[in-house]
Amino acid sequence: MGSPDAVGIPLRQLAERCGAELAGDGDVVIDRVATLDSAGEGAIAFLSNSKYRGRLAGTRASAVIVAPGDAQATALPKLVTTNPYAAYARVAAILHPARAPLPGVHPTAVVAGSARVAPSAAIGAHAVIGERTRVGERAEVGAGTVVGEDCSLDDDCLLHPRVVVYPRSSIGPRTIVHSGAVIGADGFGMAEQDGRWLKIPQLGRVVVGADVEIGANTTIDRGAIGDTVIDDDVKLDNQIQIGHNCHIGAHTAIAGCVGIAGSTTIGRNCKIGGAAMISGHLEIPDGTVISAATGVFDSIHSPGVYTGTFPALPHREWKRVAAATRRLRSILERLRALERAQNDKET
Image (cartoon, rainbow, N blue to C red; front, top):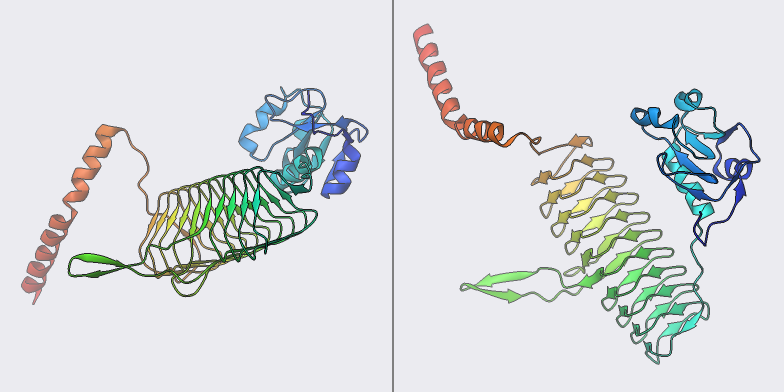
């Protein structure tokens, strides 16, 4: 059965709304998305990786989404498109639309007298809105979320429960912030003197653009003097740390557990794999791909795919490889000595 929010739509209409080619019965009614293995009557499944093509034969879906090269592998009604995964995303959004929030301020919420909350906005239970903060049309602030003073939440923002937005932060339209995220906390700015640490006041802001998504428990520090900037359509996974004064370019996607030290600039349309660690005060150009668990310690000057991890091995084999790696320096020194000796003989 479909979810309570699902709506049944003929496959023909889904094809038109997604810009996909229809093949087969366009009158079959679709009310939900599902995997090839779990789909049943009324569901549409998708195939985006040809290595799973064999599962098409056994699926019980009413329709499928496939690439042109896989279209002949099933007789089911189908949507044919060069990007099945993107089409699936569009179909899922059509069939499972988000619920519109009920406008209004919950009686337990605390809204400062100087705050400006649009009539169509929704402020949840025990939420806090600080002085002079603006909440835009149709914005939703979840239960227990705290938004400090002098903040700006633009139209159609969604802050899930228990988000913390520090003072003077700005969040653009249609941006989604998931639970536990902290936006605008102090950057890690310390000056050492006589063996002790002096805290450097963090005077900047966090400025988040439009259509950004910020994952659960992700933290974005405000700038030390200037601003930390997250450009439009950036997608941040869960548990990412972004240091002060960083600039993340538009349309960049960053997977979970990535750490980015302060004052780093990451270009547009970059992709950064999970658990990558990026040092501070460096630059990464537009279109760069950084593999999961890669360490980046210097600026990258040419876009490309960068990988700094060693593939997994059986433990005993890994120990042998590690032992050999530790000997590389001495082996190199011996090789250089042999080369010098050979050169001396030749001269």
